[in-house]
Length: 304
Image (tube, rainbow, N blue to C red; front, side, top):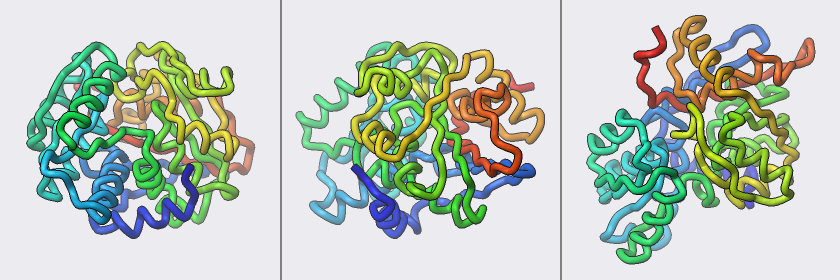
């Protein structure tokens, strides 16, 4: 479990390593432009907090850092490792977008492509970390990672004066957990998932994290088969709500962000915005809402 105090401690630790990303105001709607973060997503925050916390405690192992990822978390850990002078090895599914694989290699990471889903890459990565003694960086289910992701919510609160509701796309749930912990008692948090990747929604229905099907346009970034234990516990404690949107809605929302605001995001990011466009989430007349634009590691060729 994590609290706002953990998020505040993470901000102190990583403040000089990450960007304070801007917000865009559209009447009573705010967009937090976290896709402008280092490596193109919020994941840099959690990666730096995980690696720096380990370095403070025991130092980084000679074997470096190992991560499993659909792409964005791997980019973040590769970047954090490079900045701190450590080796990085990243396991991704064979289905990972070529643009993300190319960027991983450009950051100097050794890339291992294993299996068709994130879960298979994860299994291979944890075994490799155990065999080599490398520091394992989980993309969403470690306290330091979740707390690091939540630092964007502290920024959002300062930049907007506070909002009533935050809409956030959810895969494994690390960002959701960090935001919910940071804003507990201050703002409502609504988790938005594609119908084809409903890990958090399935967990709420079952009363515990369970395996859920993974497919669709956002599977590369939201394709965790099971929501993390830490995110699930934080979400239940803070009463995070759940909304599902279709792949067609996600595609339309991604295109709308580009056509209306010239904001380029990946499909997973667009899920949160789709909840507003479709009316899956309808704010009250005076409600202030923020949407987290959490990642932009995508091929923009189909946005024209």
